[in-house]
Length: 216
Figure 1 (cartoon, rainbow, N blue to C red):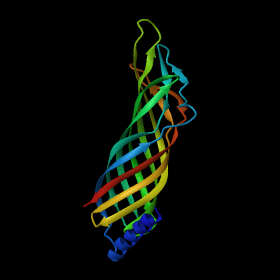
Figure 2: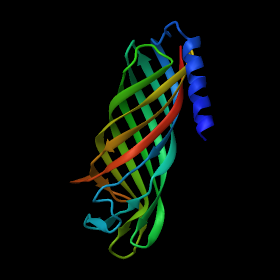
Figure 3: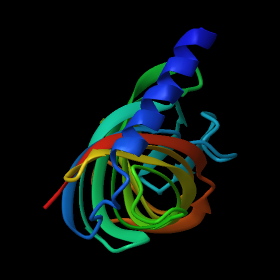
Figure 4: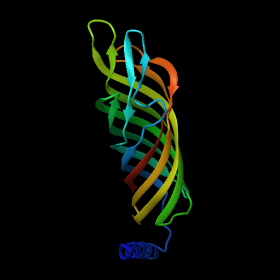
């Protein structure tokens, strides 16, 4: 294991040495990413619900889940600004009942690099996004005839974290990072009807991201 780690570091050093000239990191880029999203918090405990009058909306406990995403951004010397969309799938439980949920988010991300135009660059980032959570079979009608359907939650949140970008070629970059997502859900909807404003649901989770960029 130690030999492999030393070999990996040596390869990175060779890549860095072979790119002594600064990379041109400016320009437009597009990319794809693989998020691993966590949705946690005291309200998402799997034993609480909203009473919307004619419907009950269950608040499930949500496990971390994988997904996919797309990115469009603009690079400068020491920072990037990008718009992203991501989707992830999750397993849920409410009491002893298991089901599914999906998270969709669109956001704006600012990324500051600690090294200028290098092959291997650490960064810190901050983002804000609009999230749309769908919990399958989490809404039930309380009156006859009993009906069940999907519940929807929406919220606006903040994210912050950091990571590393590796650019082995002028137009190609790989990245991996981690961030904390604080995303209180302030509106809820049953399987039918309008969204209702509620007490913000506490949602704080750790998300991991990896992906690849192509710079034009």
